[in-house]
Image (cartoon, rainbow, N blue to C red; front, side, top):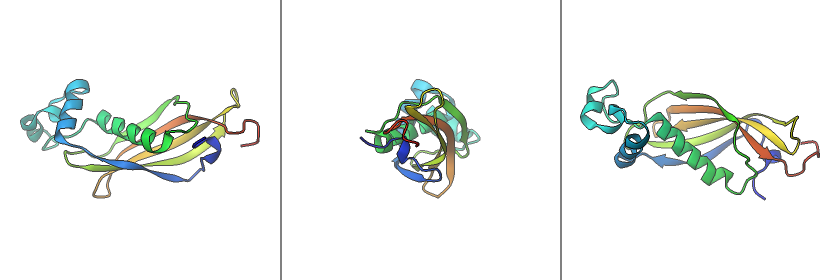
Length: 152
């Protein structure tokens, strides 16, 4: 069994991997899910407040979710999430940017109504190649307990 509730330590930070945003993927994602001109049209993006093509914030969050699942949650006792508490898009993600993701454990507790699982509060951070945090996501995740009732 992989990562479970008991393995999560408050204050721990996990490196989740990185991703470089290409023009083709930025445009393809935006055309399908967020077709605003500054995501899909070079001329319109250049004339916008961004001064050039930028990735959709939803694209950035989707990439981070993929990094988390493939590089951290695969084989874990993850049971999904009851929701996102907060998303902050702090800086634009530009074509060619490489975003590195970290996941920090903020808090955790065993569920009072379903004691076979725990609720873990986390904060994801997307950090670009310049060391700038471009996005943060605060969420909760559900993880099964390896030993329910053992006082985790």
